[in-house]
Structures are given as structure tokens and as C-alpha cells.
Image 1 (cartoon, rainbow over the protein chains, first blue to last red):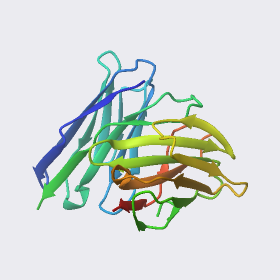
Image 2 (image 1 turned 120 degrees about the vertical axis):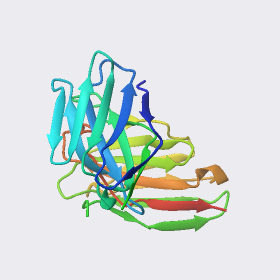
Image 3 (image 1 turned 90 degrees about the vertical axis):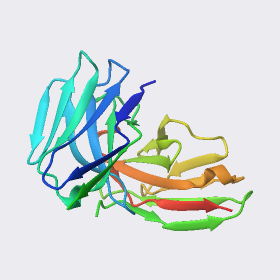
Image 4 (image 1 turned 90 degrees about the horizontal axis):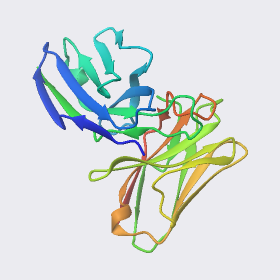
Length: 114
Length: 114
């Protein structure tokens, strides 16, 4: 099965700085890569996703890049704010597959200091 | 609010007991997924149902079972509980046709086995 590795496990940045979280995957058939944000006491919430036919996707202060050859993808958050503090999860799956599962990384605890 | 409702929010029980966790998916979503979140295992996929039928199975123990009813709500039954079953259990639903894209997670049920 798929194996998703995520680094770092914790990340502390100053407000206004950028944050980068990196993930690698093992299954070359994976073609859908979402990122989820989990705030304390809540369930994970999808913040951005990318498909394998795209190398980069941006949504305001959040961007995701994908390198299919190297099998890694990254989340970039610019101009971080205290409300960005949360646990971030990367995931991988095969889009179009009816097997219906996401393989999650172990998560990154992001803390943004004011 | 994701639109996915999970009850109860907290559950405290003893070893050997049986509990039932309930999930109502977002209106119109036919797929329901169950995930277990623990500090040592991260987010682990347990099982998926699509329109009442089991679609995919992950790391679900034989002591655990689930079903999806005609009104699309789902229940996860955990029996012969052990201390190690203590975890946060999430339900998620998806608008995609039985696929894992764009999962919407509930707030989870925190299970404590004493």
C-alpha cells in the first residue's frame, strides 16, 4: 500500500514568516494529494489539493507544489498569522479509484508566534 | 461546520464493553468513511461505505464493525474494548462518487477506555 512520510513533525515560525511542510509518497499510481488542517477539538478540514497533472496550485497565502518524478509534494504558507496555528496533514490517493481511501502523513504541528 | 454530525462527542467506558458511534453525513453525500486518530498511529483509515454497501476496508480490527443505513447514517460498533482502543474516531463523508476526494470530517468522538 501507499506510505506517506511528512516532515517536520513540529514547526514554529514568527508571524509574517513563511512555513513549508514536505511530504513524500511511495506509490507512483497516486495522483491526488490533498492537505488538511486540524484545529484543536475539530476534525481535519481540506484546505487545498493538487492532482498529478498539475505542478503547482495556489490559493491566496497557501500553495502546494508537486514533483511526480521525486514523489514529493509540499505545502507553502506565506505571511503566516497566529490563526494558521494548527496540525497540518498531507495525504495521497488514487483519484478515480473506488477503493476510497486517503493515506495520511503523521501531521505537522505548526505554531505561529505573534 | 462541515455538515457531518458525530455523536456522542465523548465516551468513557471500561475494558470489555461495547460502544456504538454514530455519524450523519452531509446532505447528499453517499459515502461515509471512518478513521481512527491516535498519537502513535496517526490518522488510520478503518472502513468506507457507499450508499449502504461496504466499499473499502482498512486497518479495522475484527472486534470492530460498521454499517450504513438506508437513510445514509452510519454506525461504528466497537466491542470487547481494550485500553489501546482509546482514540479519536472520525467520520467523514464525500460528495464524490465513492471516491476519497474532498472528504468532509465531523468533529469526532473521543473514546476513553478505562
